[in-house]
Length: 117
Image (tube, rainbow, N blue to C red; front, side, top):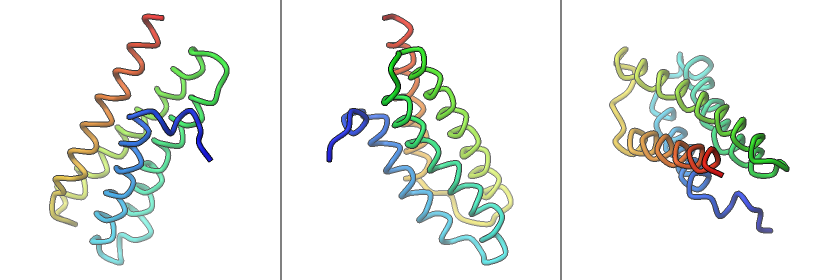
């Protein structure tokens, strides 16, 4: 099964980011398992989900709207990650930081390209 969003680099990168978030949150203490872990995982899963939903919509305007939602979830995830590091709940993750930066860049590029069309 192949869908339009499977070809989007932003979606592919966001899927890898989810994997990095699951690896990172698996290192958090059990006390955080129902708090920050759950929030981070939901925010992470929201990113590729919204990219996929937007790509399946009928108009570029709708796609742009869902890309905006994905970027909002990405910002939420980044904030939660930074909190986990500042509170010393886990060691910083290069792969997670790299993934955040990559998805921010790719989704921003998609948004800019939609505005030009």
